[in-house]
Amino acid sequence: MTDKAPKKKSPWSWRSQAFRGVIYQILAIGIVALAVWFLARNTMINMQARGIQSGFDFLGDPAGFDIGESLFAFDSAAPYWKAYLVGIVNTLRVAILGIILTTILGTLIGVGRFSRNALVRGLCYAYVEMFRNIPILLQLLMWYLLLTETLPYVQDAITLGPMFLAKGGLIFPKPIWEIGHLWGAIGLVAGAMLGFAYRNWAYRRFEATGQLRSMFWVPLGICIVTGVLAWWAGGAPLHFEFPIKGDFSIERGGALTPEFLAVLLGLTMYTAAFVAEVVRSGIQSVSAGQGEAAAALGLHPRQVMRLVTLPQALRVIIPPVTNQFLNLTKNSSLAVAIGYPDVVSIANTSLNQTGRAVEAIAIVMLVYLTTSLSTSLLMNWYNARAAIQER
Image (cartoon, rainbow, N blue to C red):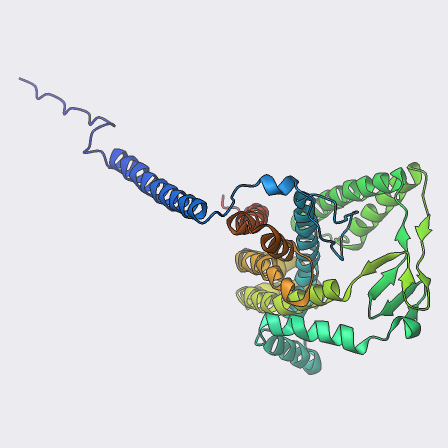
């Protein structure tokens, strides 16, 4: 008589660990949703009891205030949603430029910590220790005071070719928008993609044959040439609105205000100190034998750093650098302390005028949550791409 085969455990049985895990997760989500509903309901009841209006319908009302710095036209008759859009664009402008400049400066300083020149090493070390140990808010105030107190008035503005530097900021010739500029921008994007593809091909050829090709100047040339050709095909527009210096102000042209420059300089200099330390630790994580082997093959020290050490250090560098990018974006909210009209400043003004505190804070939270998650997704993709592929 043969023994019967044991019965298969049902996936819907309480004895199944996977099934119990699903149930526990559903219960956890339900408890969190219930808590959020309870808090939201009590908040709405308390606001109604006090006669406080709620809802996002105020976004369609006229803002009633002007914004000193905007990339597009805005006046007091524009609705609140457009004011928030101006604040979001101003925040993104600082964050994106800050991330680019921080990456360049932080990488240079981090690599400079390994320079054979003692003066360069000392300056890089002093930079890191000074800027990362001073609170970011103090640095923003310092840059703002330097720009507003040391720069001359309009009458004595510093002339830099067609540009002027004064207490009003840096005033520069502004291109008059034409369709050819759009073509040029498309050409630059296409050129950047082609240059990136060429760089990947050149790196694969270097790994396969040892034959070194330019991985910076040739991709840069491809990007510039493609952009110029597209701009030329679009009519090659070269019309600018030049600034005109008057007795009391500088009219026309574009301007980078002291508030914008102070925020950009403060965030860049502060975050670059942390990025430099991340780059330094990433380089130190690479075995010294890698550099010695590359030097034995006849590579120059700069080539060793660019082609051997940094690519291997990226797997250590990228995750903490992602955190620094997120910190930079969130620290931009401190710009309200020096009067830069970012999304926090716009939210504070609209809150004071409408009394919609919950809604204004919710919009700010949503903006920073979206930008942070977008940055994380992009950096996670790059991290997965730069990771060592196991066979």
